[in-house]
Length: 138
Image 1 (tube, rainbow, N blue to C red):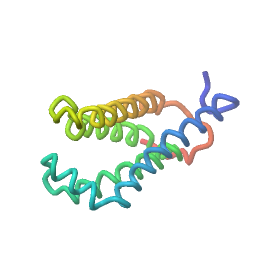
Image 2: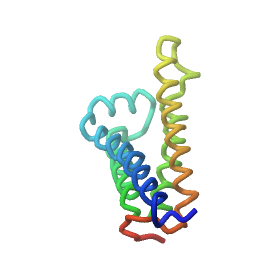
Image 3: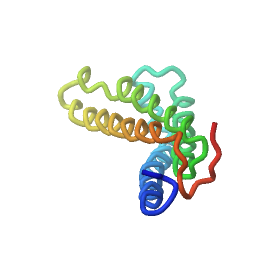
Image 4: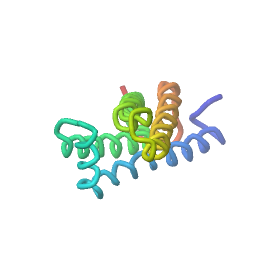
């Protein structure tokens, strides 16, 4: 199936907007809630928690927008997938928290794993020509 024309191109564009848009929105959330997220990151033992919150916000905004626009999609999708899997294990370790926190952490863990799966799908098709992109890549 060609991803650079017709209905497939439109569906891919809508999927990129939904997926990449959510990633970018989550990144903006890091900037809007720096204080609370820094406290959470510090409680999880992240060194330089404020820097980590800001850096991960930049990564999510840049990665999400790159997926939406089709700019360096291989780099964007690969970086986002690695980040999401690492943050799922490091920050949402539902197996290691008190029982009253386990459900919330499991929800966030599963969300990150689901989004990482989406990023891997994008990575798998990143070498194909996409419709409606800026078309800058490696």
